[in-house]
Image: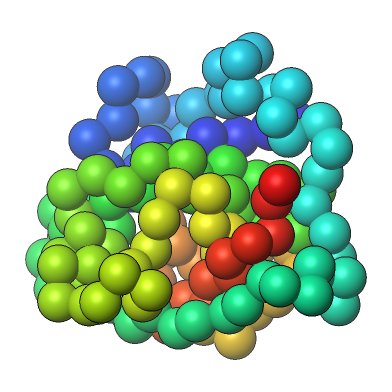
Length: 141
C-alpha cells in the first residue's frame, strides 16, 4: 500500500491514528500519484549515475513543529518528496543556495542513519525530534 505523509505539514486529508495512539497523519496516496509510483524506486546501490546525495538536519523544537513535506513511500525503500510546504525544511531551504535546497522530486534515502525501508523512514520522520536526513536528487525520471 502506498502512503502519503501529511504529518509533515498542514494536512488536507483525514488523519490516521497510529497503533500507539499518536496522530501519524498518514493518508492514502491519490490515484493520480499511484501511477507515478508504479515504476518503483531503485535500490540504494542502484542510483542513476547522475543522482547526487545531500544532507539536511532539522530539529523539532516544539511538538507542533512540522518538517513541511508531502512525501510518499516508493518501492518500499525511499520517500519521494511531492511538495515543499511551510515548516522546518522550507526554513532550511531559505538559508541555502539553489543546489542545496530540497525540491519536489527529491527522495529521502536515509533518516537518522536508517536506510532501505520506507516504513522505518516514515516512522523516524514522524517520531524523532532531530532528523538527520539524506536526500537524493535525480533518482526519478
